[in-house]
Length: 357
Image (tube, rainbow, N blue to C red; front, side):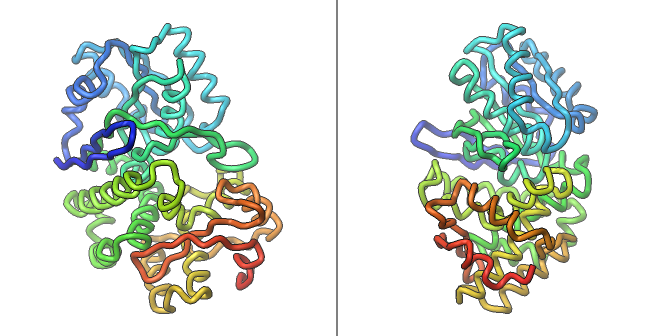
């Protein structure tokens, strides 16, 4: 078991990681959340594996548990689902001493965090991430929110959990496509911050793909430590934290254009990283060999590195609505050399100047 502490102005909280630690979840939640009444939010995919087990563990610790199951997939990350959870909490008479637990991937975590931030102006919650994206990225850092039909993650709040409790063994029940998609976020961390992590991925990819627990713990702990350091320096994305969006600007646009149905988040991010790496080379920051290294690693995972040839005007329209867009300029994340990211205000024309799509 390992622990990374996320330190922010409002306090701190642990990210506990390990392999085979799931059976101790109930005691950890009792310690960090307290209280007596808890709403357990999960999705229909996770429900069949873990809902009953987690509910029994929590009840053993004295909790009155109220499960709420949302439909699996990005389509549930909406204000309509948020309202459904609000209705449930109100009907169950959940008060400020009650808490929430997010058991699932990034969608469940983002949604539950947003509900926790806004219900009764804020109640305590915990994250128990079951997907790789959530374990390495989405469950910590305090970003919560939902999508809007006009753009991804446009509605949200900064609100931190009391604890993040991660068992990498849960990844073995994750659909293979979701696991591979999640590796895109791990590659992102290596590309923007830690070239040694990037090299570890290159040299140990077969073990990672085979769910070797030591390799999984290495990448999860590394990503959590990196994010904790970035969030400590910039909790609300006033500057440095924006580097975590490497590959996400166009990735989010692609997800929105396709109605969150065609691509997994990591798949879209991988294509966005491929584009951003090429643009980094165009801007003189990244060598052609480093571009090749990044694209080769993503391709070995089984991810695409080229944006689909959708109408440019659609990409442009969504970039103009992006949270990082100001006065016609987009704060675009570029890298160079590998392991270092920088923020570059670029015009739409500059972003797409070399794109042949």
